[in-house]
Image (cartoon, rainbow, N blue to C red; front, side):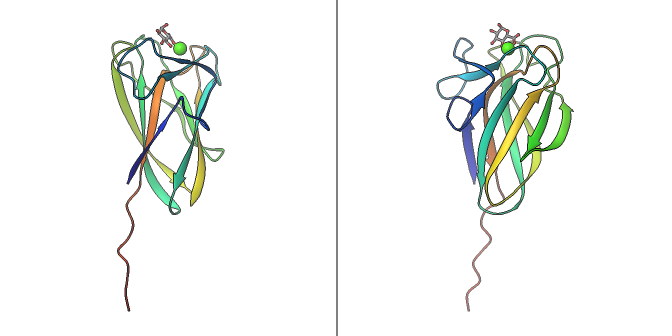
Amino acid sequence: ATVRYEAETSPATCDGTIDSNNAGFSGSGFCNTSNAVGAAAQFTVNAPSAGTVSLAIRYAHGATDTRSADIAVNGATIQAASAFPATGSWTTWSTKTVSIPVNAGNNTVRLAATTAAGLANIDYVEVTDGGTPPQQNG
Ligand code: GCU
Ligand code: CA
């Protein structure tokens, strides 16, 4: 199954503002972090079981500077200074996908800027798991 978590929807948090000036986002806005190292967008994502899931991060990056992020799950960095390549304009949205380890239940996914410009604008994350294994009867 794939579940979407919008950056503007609690319990997600955004170290900055939820903006809606750059079209093409899902839901009611996107996270525009402040221009600072460490500025973060954080999500709480649920997994039915422990394992590895796919995390798709929808973002826009209309400037040409580097907007890398440390990607952490439950406090452990799984990708340091992970690149969010420029998308060409602030209304051009792209998706970056990474594999992440999860526990059963709620997990904290944190994207924290590693450069002074903050993060790219973050629209949502989607988590896709491998589905429920078939039930064994008898
Ligand atoms: C522009 C854009 C913002 C973006 C910002 C930035 O102001 O409209 O959405 O966050 O650039 O450079 O981070
Ligand atoms: Ca910004």
